Length: 212
Image: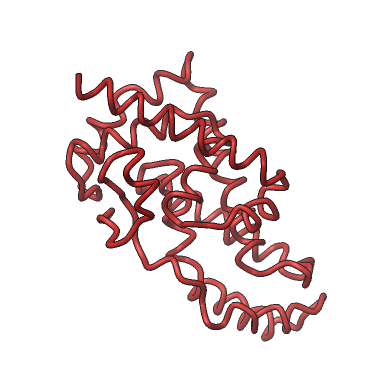
């Protein structure tokens, strides 16, 4: 279920409202630096199976919530996550050791999530058909454990352009540093900061309109 986080940056929380929907402590795994050592090109099947099992165990929960905050629906998030791990398995031998496993997997997860949204838009005439009513659909979702205000926040995020949505989620929920985000998204830190602050302003205005 989506639950309230126990912590959030006060300055950012005050800008939007006292609501947050997330899961997990957001801390980096203690084994983060150990996995790249065994990413050494072509591997034996036993090595590949062992490594893949470790990746799934270590990152599946965090990846699920990264994906879920983009696509919103639980079943859609599960489908996208399966695609992420299929792609990761197929490209495991080509992993570049200069990247961290988390960065590599995050990049796949974000790209797959955005591709999913683009495909979904092909079935509707306008993007607004996807974002209008998001709040009410979330409230009716058995996997959503939030109130109307939290649903309104998710609706506001859903209305953001793709890049702003990703940047906001990574910064606000996962408290990712701009330097790490820059490496992940291949975008300058200055552009990311601008995207985040524009997203915050749009979300604030949306929540304000809901309360008037």
